[in-house]
Length: 407
Image (cartoon, rainbow, N blue to C red; front, side, top):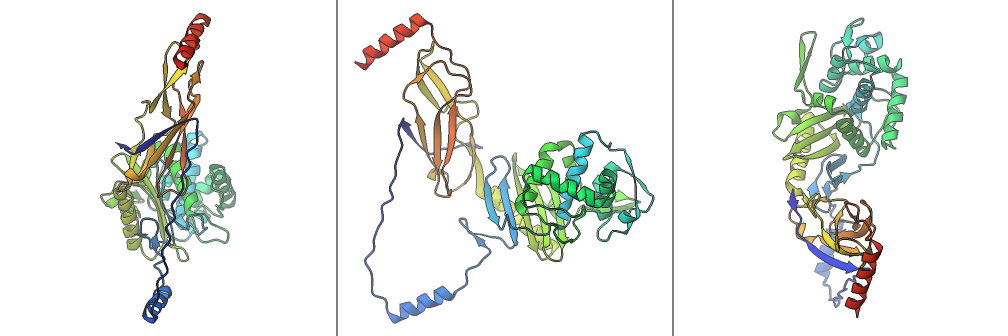
């Protein structure tokens, strides 16, 4: 992370107004040829896969790329449009299991008896058999690494009695997270009417898995899993590429196509990516790899001030000290590496501060603008420690000094 260099404008108790100059061009005569060329250009269909403002091509029907530290959206395409999540559903299935483990309701070594429902489920599996006694930890690995539908049913029945009840619990917890457009009808992700989510909601589930259960998150990057002497590879091909990928989950269904929620870390910086609507496993891996590399290479994280360092020193009255240090509540921003210098900042604060001031009190604000942003960003300026009030006699002396300086 680099220290951001941009234009600072300091404002004392006032508002800065800006006006854009408008240039008018004189009309020019158009020939028949130019009109014909114009008509041809109007009829040309734009490439709907090119996303603005950076011109990146995205073949996925739905896509979302976000910087984890700052929350900055680097690209999005139909990110809030519902679709079938397929096996990406298992992100939430695994979350529910990890939640039960953390709360002590179950243990990693707890044994689960495999039912007919789990054995007879279609699709990818870890080759469970009816009556098997399998540990929760092995089922969790089979769920995440080899995308076992049988593991999903077994865990759902173990935790909630039935898959339907478990799906209702999944939906409830997901909505508590903020996944407002998510409804789960099963634990595996097999196609079912009303079973839906969005790229935005899948991102929330994935981030919460990383944050809430770091001790279990590492399962996502394990390359293989063996059960009944049958070894299967992790379906996330990004794990085999040199991109820093450590999760999260792939998915496939005939209607949405191939999708993935991926997370990768490079030089301490983490990106989360959601894509779906691709035609093959290879295209899914290639698209995800390309978009992650674009995100790491095109954008960087920059600080407007070092953590714990003041951004400005403000004069203060009626205090044993003459100045107070103020720093922003937010330091880190994600910016296009070639557009850093287009950032502008305006600092606003009261011209005279008076003690006492408590740690955390706001004494001003920094307003940041950038051509790539739709809206400006306003960050409070706060003090980090208490500033006591001077004694009565000291305040009298300071007042006289102030009045003399004013004259």
